[in-house]
Structure formats: structure tokens, C-alpha cells
Amino acid sequence: MYECAIIGTGAAGISAALTLKALNKNFIWFGDGKLSGKIRSAEKIGNYPGLSMVSGNELAESFLSQIKEMDIRIENKTVTGVYQMEGYFSVLCNQDMYDAKTVILATGVESVKPVKGELEFVGRGVSYCATCDGFLYKGKTVFVVCTEKSLEHEIEYLASLAAKVYVVALYKNVALKSGNIEIVSGMPVEITGGRKAEKVRFRDKEYSVDGVFMLKAAITPSVLVSGLETENGHVKVDRSCATNLEGCFAAGDCTGRPYQYAKAVGEGNVCAHAVVSYLAEQKQKETLSTV
Ligand SMILES: Cc1cc2nc3c(=O)[nH]c(=O)nc-3n(C[C@H](O)[C@H](O)[C@H](O)COP(=O)(O)OP(=O)(O)OC[C@H]3O[C@@H](n4cnc5c(N)ncnc54)[C@H](O)[C@@H]3O)c2cc1C
Image (cartoon, rainbow, N blue to C red; front, side, top):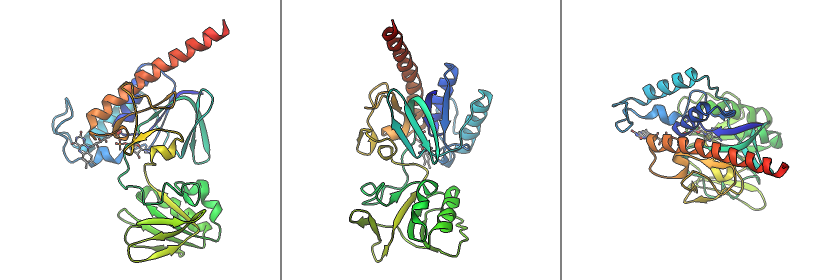
């Protein structure tokens, strides 16, 4: 059992990982091994203390070498679910499950807002993970909205099972090969259905489908962690970055504006310290209960 699971390799997750490592905690860290694309996307950063007009790429390389120097490992995986158990969390990455006493959500904000109906039909025809749920659609018709080139293999996997795969690809250099894939232009406005998702609607057309896959780098936190309280689309936290779920903390863009590196780094640090205090309190409770 890990003492903490950190989700997300942006500025918030990096700061949390560096602090937990310095405090000698046993943690696992999930996300893109090359770090958040958002770190690299800034042309010049003028407001990061100590690094004047650094580029996003320079900042990312500097973060990576610091992570390496501190001997910290990134588990190059997307988390598909976080489940609160009795006194710990089970973190699911497709088929692999990891247990941790605490969780830090550092998942950033989604660049693509959920489509109308998306959240309503999660688990009823809408999925975020092709390798988890693809087998349900053998010989059927599925619709995919994909935001990342790195997730193209998930579309090919779906194409190996389904009869037909419609794809809205929101990235450059699309290189999908399977003959049963059809690229669709535009962006869906709504997912509709009855008991299950049945149609993907555009302004000027609609597709009848058996399932919808939203393949993105970030999954809405309240979908990722059932029972998590949010406010205006952000994770609700107190000053110690604690969420409404005991042992679950959140940092960075996912907790709200301003969307800035310095705020993300600060909250990542606060989260790590809050985790350490929480673990110590839990240990004390356990000791008292055995006396
Ligand atoms: C073009 C651009 C320029 C910017 N310029 C500046 C600037 O000059 N100054 C400034 O202060 N800020 C700037 N920002 C904002 C800054 O990039 C963000 O505030 C910062 O990256 C937030 O860090 P974060 O760790 O909260 O989230 P992110 O950097 O978004 O990182 C979150 C990470 O979590 C990952 N993740 C999400 N869900 C999961 C999951 N389920 N499993 C595994 N991983 C997951 C995501 O893929 C992502 O890698 C800029 C942003 C952009 C887009």
C-alpha cells in the first residue's frame, strides 16, 4: 500500500512529488512521463519566480532533470477511476489497480469542455477508456472524440473490435489506418438517448451509435472520483487543499483560477504537507485504538 497516489504530471503534481520525496514518503505518481503538455505550450513565461522569461520547454526540461536527480519515477499511465475504500483509495489505470492511503488530484483543467449529455451518460454508453470498455462493442457502432495524438492506439483498438468507428480527431497529424474508421468533421453538440446513449448530434447531422468514447488527457475530477464535491467545474478544497473526501487532496488548475504555474506549484506543496499531517493523524488514531 502506497502512502499517497499523485495524479497528474503538471506543475502541481511535480511540486507535490518533489515535496513528498523530500519528506521521505512512499508514493506512486501517475501521468504523462514527458510531463503536462501545458508546461511546454507557453512560449515565454514572465511570472515564474527565479526564471526570467523562461520558455515552457525550458521549464519542462528543468523539471524533468530535477525529477531525475531526486530519483522519482513517473508511472506513465492514465488514471481511469479512483474509489474510496475503508481508510484508503483504490486507483484504477485501465485494468491495473493500485492502493494508496491518500490521493492528490493534480489533473489540471480540460481543454475541451464536456459535450452536453456526456456526464449524464457516463457508464450508460459513454466511456473514457477504450481498453476498459471496448470489449462491450464487438461488432457495434461507436463514436469517438479524441483530443490527443498519443491516444490514437485506443481508436485502433476500438476499430479492431467494432464494426464501425466514427472519429472526431481534435489533434494534428491524424494517422488512423483501419478501414472501418470514418473521420467526421466538426464537434458534437449533444449526446442523447434513453436508458443508454444512442445518438451523437451535430448542428447539421446526427449519428446513431451503440457507444461513445471521449478520449482525452484529462477526465473531469467528479467523474474520476465518485462523491467528489465540485463548484463551478472545479474541485472544492479548503486552505489545506483537502476535498470533501477524507484523505483526498487537490492542487493546481483543477481547484480553480488563477490558472498559473506559481499557484499550481504552491498548492502542490500545500497538498504534500497536508498528506503528511493526515498520515500522522491516522497513525496516531491507529496506535490509540490498539492501546
Ligand atoms: C499556452 C499557455 C501558456 C501559458 N502561460 C502561462 C504563463 O506564462 N504563466 C503562468 O503562470 N501560467 C501559464 N499557463 C498556465 C499553466 O500552464 C497552468 O496553470 C499550469 O500548467 C497548471 O498546472 P497543473 O499541474 O494544475 O495542470 P496541468 O499542467 O494541466 O497538468 C495536469 C496533468 O494531469 C494530467 N491528467 C489529467 N487527468 C489525468 C488522469 N486521469 N490520469 C493521469 N494524468 C492525468 C494531464 O494530462 C496533465 O498532464 C499557460 C497555459 C497555456 C495553455
